[in-house]
Amino acid sequence: MTPERSFSQPPTQAPKTLLFRDETISANTEYAEHCHNWSQIICIKSGVMSMTVAGQRYLAPSELAIWIPAGIKHSSHNRKSTRFCALDISAELSLGLPVEPCILTPTPIFNAIADDCFARNMHEPQTEADLRLCQVLLDQILLSPCQSNYLPGSEDKLLAPILEALEKEPANNMPLAQWASQIYTTERTLARRFQQQLGMGFSEWRQRLRFLYAISLLEQGKTVQQVALDVGYSSSSAFIAMFVQLSGTTPQRYLQQK
Image (cartoon, rainbow, N blue to C red; front, side, top):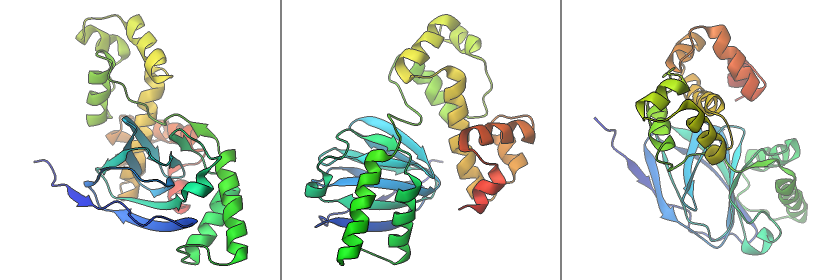
């Protein structure tokens, strides 16, 4: 049975400068498509955020952020519970910031200032000191490493059914050659399509998918051994090696840092 979706209302209050929001959304919660005349940076704190921005799907794990420029249509539907901190940035302060949606890796300075503002339950900066801090925050957005997408998707007739099948079953270990045989093409053709359409190879895309799913499973309280099997690894050591490669830390330390 398909889980029943719940629907949340997007923000409607336009920021005079910046608005700070800390939200936790339940599993199977959807925000309908909308847009507004201010920009947003959505910093994922736990879980994996799934959004469609300007017609493109974005998936981002915790410690990354999704940048949405003013006037860009976006929506979201998250299968798992997700917590995020959002900064709504006025149209005036958005000038000079990125004009295209993207995935950002916030700098340590950005994280330190944002964490301080949220810890003080700041809704909007009021003092001159806080306004100066927020200007540094905006400067750090421009300095944050940017990528077009952490896990890109494709409508390509050869790739789309493979990506959809793997998202439904991340533990599927079928090699690219067997996928090619199933859709009556060659492994070489599929490998070329992955690079052309997604900017990465089949193995890297599947590894990133497994990493995203692993984060959600770990945050649900599953053991490392359980998660390793659930995402297609035959041993905990192989899973941990993948996790360290993509996150720079072990699953246990990752959870301790939350």
